[in-house]
Length: 55
Image (tube, rainbow, N blue to C red; front, side):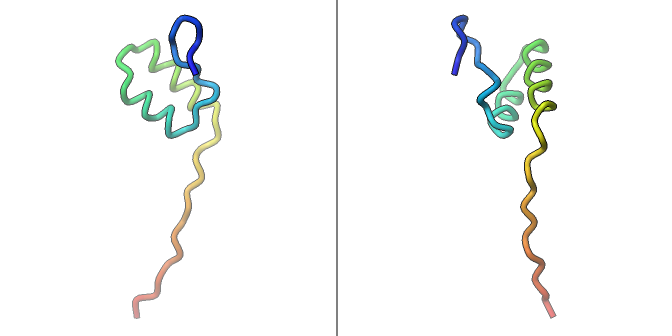
């Protein structure tokens, strides 16, 4: 989704999309905006793999 000026709307993006956008961004103002959007979202759930017993 983009606004009428052509800039990406950050609201509907998920954490992985925002992270990718942050890596590709070059302007400090855009990076700060994306980082604020990331900080508003809860951290991504880390799925722990079951430990295997190697005995």
